[in-house]
Image 1 (tube, each protein chain N blue to C red):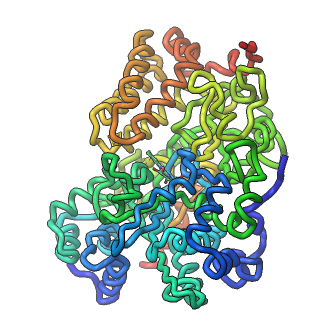
Image 2: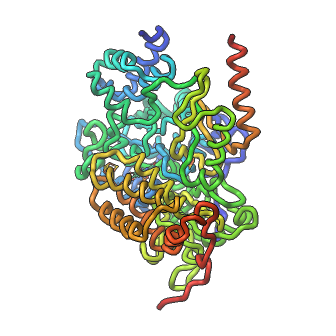
Length: 451
Length: 165
Ligand SMILES: Cc1cc2nc3c(=O)[nH]c(=O)nc-3n(C[C@H](O)[C@H](O)[C@H](O)COP(=O)(O)O)c2cc1C
Ligand code: SF4
Ligand code: FES
């Protein structure tokens, strides 16, 4: 297993937030290399070779996405960095921007050069106000030193970066809602196509990428795409930031090579350090609140009996029946004293709160799911409510403009699929469920290998 | 109602970030600025002022202001305790945080103390899930909350007010 750190390798260097230290530690080398020795297409090729996949949640190959960018003459193109980070369980971009703002700026300059963008916006959630200030300060440092502005390094390339504050809306993390918001409107997702690559910000061709994705461009250019692709397994190349939270000993942000097992990630002292307070692992949502929850037994091993690894492929092994997803890397751990019904209720409430309201299945369905889950949690549900919940989530999925509908449906579906006993227990034990929880039950029992 | 000279400059600086004619994009940042300047919330007058400043229809400003959760459409206390209650925070005791604030200040989510000092609000995930339980207060995040820390924060606010009077 690799312990390689690419993004966070200098995180402990004192003063790395500031330009002088960052530069002394080798910062901005990738800008020199890219602008002076590479062509824009050469950079896109390098990113393709690296196998880098979008770190915002969908895992779409970055190089491929970049190659879709339309390039009509006389029309500006934009790079927009998605720093909206609002998916429950996810707090990695914040960490990167707060402590390594120059890494993001460096990545933006190189990416802008590759895409032919002269103006880039970092759309950051409004609550991260102090981080926006850190970014502004770093941008002005970089500008003073000639890394931003006109004719950078005498190459004729111009690049500006602006920070735009959101104002509290998870949906603005969805790329087209983000663009609407950046245009000064409500964050209502657009119908695709057209895709932002053709018609994005102010109808101009636009690339939207996650903070971590853009930061990863720096080591890819410094060391080459092939070097980056050597880390990891299969199509999960390079390193990934995982923000780990819930009932573990060491919550925090970890950079992992995508070649370690889920078990190692949870139990090794290098990472989460095991379950807190000597309790047992009950369940985990490995990729942010939108991805399916898994009971301990399915989390650690796939139904083929193989170790589950921290890779895109392994985390989704088994599909929705027995797998989950890498998502945004928001790793939420539940111990044996936690209630899956209650946890699912808080997520349903979250999605109801965050639905933009454009599509009726999402607007109405999220509210119904929240109400029914609260009823069950409080011991007031009926058996038929479980089927009703199932029916509602099924009718939302795939029937909406943007994927928030799916994101609201999946957690409920997975909770019922894997923890139906616990839902039923709430209904059959209305008095007891207010006082105690169902516990770990058989959720950690070894699974029988099929195949 | 008017921004100071200095704030007007800031508005101009914000508008200069966008291409010619796209000053609508300045709406979210300028609403933040207006909320800070005019008592922590957006009254109809404030929104109309922002509309005139950015040459937008007032209805457009209302539409936007009502969409985003950080804009307060009603008066709020001097200090807002915005406690996150989503899953990961719940796993680490956000329910107790909300309960304790109620015990200390006698306010439930959505309420303001009679002296107008404190408002309690529950919010959804603030991107601090690994540092739970937590709340936002103004510009800052207060993380790993305990009863002692909450006591200290309340005292800090009261002292700040006392030192101003
Ligand atoms: C409801 C919703 C919320 C999202 N939130 C974020 C977010 O906070 N940050 C992010 O980078 N991507 C988010 N995404 C994904 C973006 O739409 C987009 O795919 C991503 O920014 C692309 O960047 P990447 O390819 O670098 O991952 C969200 C998607 C949806 C549907
Ligand atoms: S799925 Fe939900 S959030 Fe997405 S556009 Fe429809 S109503 Fe809005
Ligand atoms: S769940 Fe509370 S900050 Fe994320």
